[in-house]
Image (cartoon, rainbow, N blue to C red; front, side, top):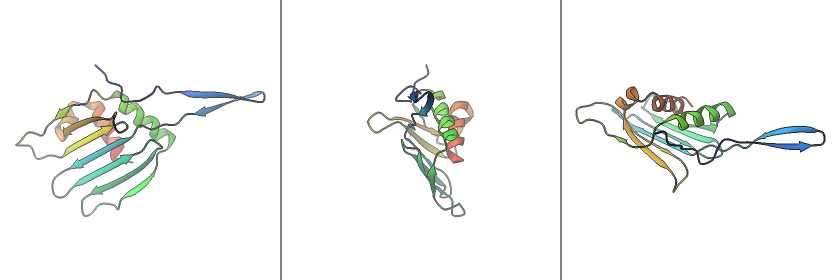
Length: 139
């Protein structure tokens, strides 16, 4: 069963101004926190706020410095669609013998957030989760 991670349905407001109609977007991003811990000091932390501001930091000693910005309308739409497509949260722990990263994805506002803990191998079994992770990694 597909679980909805969005706190509200997507919507648009239409206002009448004089004789013309204007469409205004009601923009609300779902808060997202994505943290990865891997081998050889590799770590990534992505934090997206409701207003679309994001901060991405981590990697290895050769990585780029932390960066921040604001999501474009297209990025927000793509991320919201990817969030809506993932299945219900749960745990997919890393097998003891596996050498792979472990990640925590938290979607939603504090008190209403849903958390998904998984390891690298889960992405090969869950295409919708893989798509969301790749979008977050490429901000």
